[in-house]
Length: 313
Image (cartoon, rainbow, N blue to C red; front, top):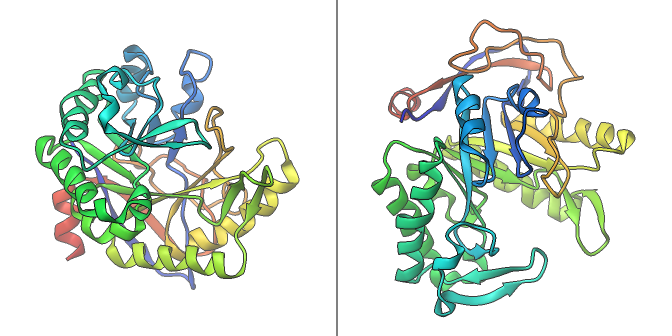
């Protein structure tokens, strides 16, 4: 399979960078009723339970499709869940009612490399979305094991697309092995204690921006995921303005959804400009108004990883 990354060419007009949403994170059902809506994106992060025929149809439209895989938890719904022995379970994540796995365990490593990833690829996915990397901060003694696991996935499956979720404390170490880093909770987030969507403030916002700056320096392709109540138009508008402001400054692609990720979200920046950019290898020349910010035009072309690395040296 061909792997894709981005090569960025900048035409400087003013101070900010234009960005657009070319990806979606959606864990709901894929069906004839929503496949056209999903087809407007260039990269999709989907449940590994999606039926093969829909994956094939999406790929026929030159869309990159990757399947979900948590590297630190098991929810019990995964096709490989039955392979996980009790000896690998080390805790419980109450928020999502998932069991925490010992990601330093040879048994877990074997399940990931020889059960989970092969299952996802057998469905026709282009690659994998690696979730819950932030568990290295809860179990710092297992930090190196997480890095080695991601490295092992890349070495065993060199041509697949790998998207990693956060894992900021190991970002520098894993960047050579991944194609994208998803910045979940970019600027906005869901407060589980207060049961409401919020914008990061003060020290928390500064921390988020520090991570954004770090990722920008690593020259890794960043997909920014922000949260909002999609039924609250006023909130979506308010959140979109600030999300797009910062996404523009860092050159991040951005997508907004509700916390369940069971509903197809939106590009929060599409109402802020009428600029056009090419959107993917297969869609160069098509109009794409999903831009936010004002300033330098960000031309994004999907290229093989090797070419991108050569250009960005």
